[in-house]
Amino acid sequence: TAVVVTDCDHAIMRMTPPALSRPAVPHGHPYYVLVESMGADATRDAARFGAALWAIRDDVMQVARDGRPFIFDVSLPIFAMENYLGEVRAALAARWAEHRCWVFGHLGDGNLHLVIRAGAPDAETRSEVERLVYGPLAGIGGPVSAEHGVGLEKKPYLGISRNAGEIELMRTIKRGLDPRNILNPGKIF
Image (cartoon, rainbow, N blue to C red; front, side, top):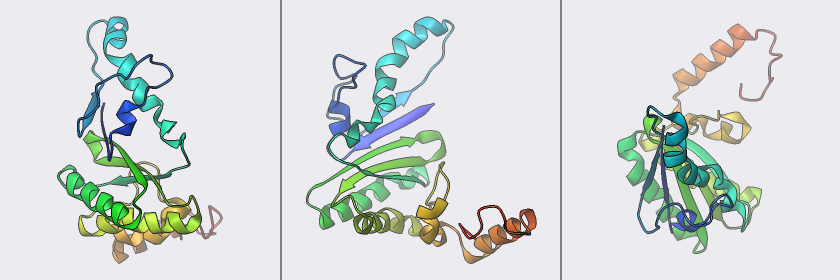
């Protein structure tokens, strides 16, 4: 398992999870990669490699201690991640001088979790942030959902990552598996 962590101001790496007495790694680097490795002695290896680094990942909700963030789950080719994040960060900065943007991801599958605090924590701001996060995915073929599904929140943005033929195929599968439309009727299709 490899998890990459990056953020606009490296604040997440300066946070000390309650499980630790001091930060697990020095701050000031643009990226941090947490790699889970297994050796011959699982007990010793877990103590040496796991506790401090994974405490950061396990306590990710510290980002909410100063206000409720908007959380996103997107996927895109690894080679496009840096440019995509640069575009999202520039758009956030252009719209809100005061904002926060933390990014966690899974290198193996091109999955990014964006945790953004900007503007008021209301539906209007969320919608504006959604457009900034999902919009750039259209040009790089990135899905608006990586591992948490589309759901009602991402429904308006499904066309960014799926073309009309793919969406019609989804409708066909839904009709085939649910001909009486009793499974979540009207939720996505």
